[in-house]
Length: 453
Image (cartoon, rainbow, N blue to C red):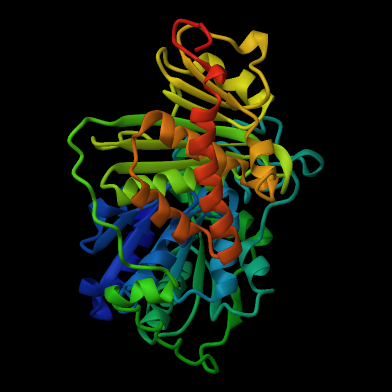
């Protein structure tokens, strides 16, 4: 008894009903005391991850412009983990309505300090009271958002008694009405009692809202552009499905997909330095596999450096559905440098293939149960005019050694990924060079038994 959520729910429901928009309304409810809103509102509902309600509401509104989208969030959700989302939604002027329940505490999770917890207020995480030197000051959301240009309406109300509840009802209705009229971003902050976590009876909790919370969070309208704000223009119509290849400046044709008569499940790890074309090689493999009628996935992993640093990617090519894009047990390793070889050699499945860009195989990387192809792929690429094509030379050796993809899908993938005519021609030569190199230097191939063939 005395919880402000029940009161707010009734006020929102009444506004939606009176404005006749129940069938158009979509409620977005994230983690927190709002999490079960779908039980209490007979409207559309989308459940959002913690703090992401305003981002989800943005997506709903943009995909369904005719919907009345309401984001219902608590102070821990909106002002803590969701602070970036609400700030940018407001700054973009997203035409959504946000109801922000501020009870100055984390209610659902047991009473931890929230961004709006008052100075000196005790919580389970501030047992001696909030200290400005340690936890900073309470965050005033309306004041913060009022500094932005885009919001149309920002107001703070309270549930500290009958008079305040009547004022809150008017603000909540206005918040919904603004969206019905096609105006921009609206946020109504509601100071709400939480008798359970505050350890007060309902009457004392209302007094606390009226006498304490309002001192630190003054009530009032913080921004009102409803008179001057023009209705937000409708978003442009999306292109027709058939026009998407033109929009993306890509080719919508694929080479004929050969029938996959044999089961294939290639789990490939490509690794090297940034700038060696590691991710590009993975993309070409995935694109070619897709063109060949396989199920594919490509997952990159790289550091912050533009060049140098480390880079690797996971590639799955399979005749069966791909259950996970992660490749933790590869049966093909393409190592463009020695550190990558040493890092991933232990994970290669027995009987798998390892292609290494080097003169000879390091002693500590030898394994008797995998097949090695060791070639100076960078030197071979350099002989063609650019050492950066080493990744495609290695791809040629891989294709020749395994024979798992025909030439047509590979050429299609290269044509799709490489936009420069000069580089496309170089990559085609590099592919051929890799195929030739595999046969030209059989002494560099180690059999599963460990002997040089």
